[in-house]
Image 1 (cartoon, rainbow, N blue to C red):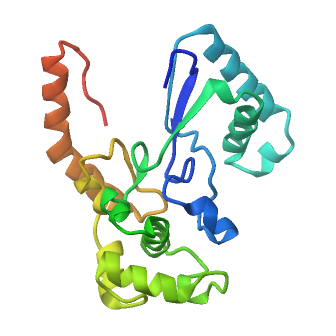
Image 2 (cartoon, rainbow, N blue to C red):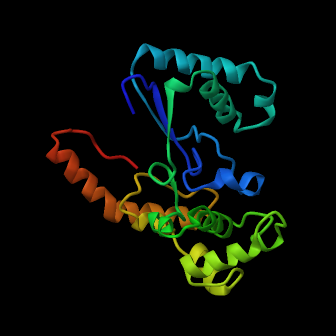
Length: 215
């Protein structure tokens, strides 16, 4: 980013970093900002942006019915003032727990990510029942990237029965177990506490930042 950026936000599919936008409405999650994870600069422009965000949310009747409308409100503000918000790709920040940068070794990284998202979260309709998808392509990518057929027990076990590949991805900054069962969220937390916490504390000490690490 640059000094003019007021805020940086990231989401599991923010800016559709692996091609989900090209799949249009067939994507399981919309290509929007995830406003639950962001860094904000302590500058007047940021203060104004947050005030406008609150006003935009408060003035909408949709906010009463939609618990996630604050994300839509921020997307509207980004369209109005694109220079103030920089979206960081979901393969770097707030990465979904099922994603790993190895997906990019495939020419169809977006499809691999879509498979991981749908299978790991139990998204409906399933790939097999979604007529909008190229099922031959999805079958081929499942074998190429995950070494298992769609709907196979092996694929389901690989993507559902653990905390997700993100925890093993050295390029991921924040792993997000969005729409994953509570046991998986807890498993991811335990793994981060065991492996990543010590590394982060060491870096904080080396940089003389006397900041306590909090999960």
